[in-house]
Structures are given as C-alpha cells and as structure tokens.
Length: 85
Image 1: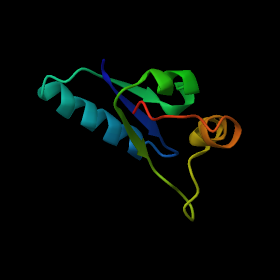
Image 2: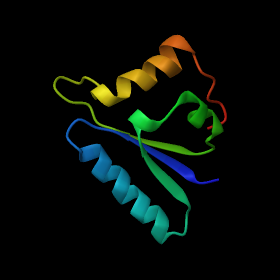
Image 3: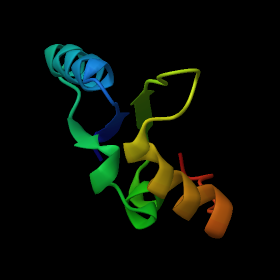
Image 4: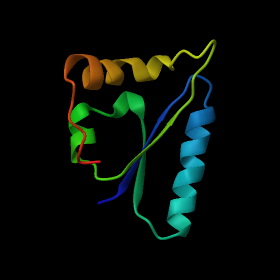
C-alpha cells in the first residue's frame, strides 16, 4: 500500500512540503499519494498503513481551516481508532 501524505495549509507552505516529501519518496522508489486534508475522510485514514501529515499552523498557532473538519470527525465525534497506522 502507498504512503499517504496529507497536507493542510492556509498559505500553501504545507502543500509544498508534502510535494517535496512525495518527490523524495519517489526518488527512493516508495509508492505514495499526496492529498489535501479537505479530501481525506476518516475511512481513508482507517485504510492507510503509513500516514505522513504536513500541517502548518497560522496566526497565533491556530490550525488551518482545512484541517478542522477532519479533526472534528476523527477526534471529537468519532474518537476514531487509528492503531492501523
């Protein structure tokens, strides 16, 4: 299974880091997928075996707006078991 790289960003810095990480994994012959946190569902996280997250805070340490929905779905609402990671 491919490494899942998830990014969440307000300004694009984390997306750039995720893309750079993906290029490095490709150089090593490691299969990977880079996805925006907006497009990731809790079920997608349950399917993953290896997850790398590139999330940047902004302002005074707030999470990016794009990360809040998934955080709520995984941590607050579902208390999702991610022991598969």
